[in-house]
Length: 186
Figure: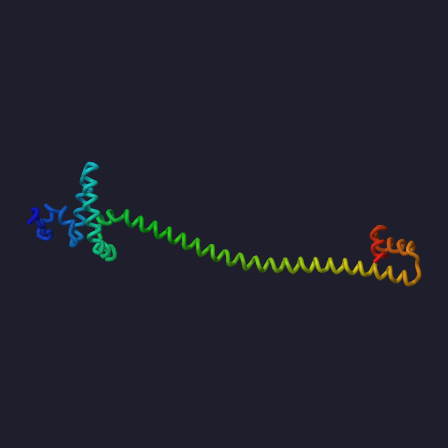
């Protein structure tokens, strides 16, 4: 052998005397995990707690599937539940955050769709109304212009002089001399 080796069979170790080594195996019992948590809580000093937290972290990773089973089966004792509480709190916060993000995304999508639909309806209504108003205004304006033009043509056909035509059109349509000249010269 190149270097000395020692094999530790954790299941053959005394539970109370070797809890730290037993915790590193993949076959820790729920009672052993709870005892380990209680030992960690009883430690004083930052360095001791950091070392214990490292062992606890390795144990939790090695027994992750078992811990999930304990959580799901309602077999988890209060000490182990307290140990897992930070992890559960993180999972809960993540779930709430994901729920909020999903809700906001769905809400925004629905709001955009409803906004587009409502905007199109209102836009069409306003567009039709504006179009009708402008069309009526334009139609009335063109109708008045045509009426003025035809009045001038009739007066010319009847032999009235331009001065008399200007006077008649000015009274009937309230136009300026320049506006009347445009109609007469067309």
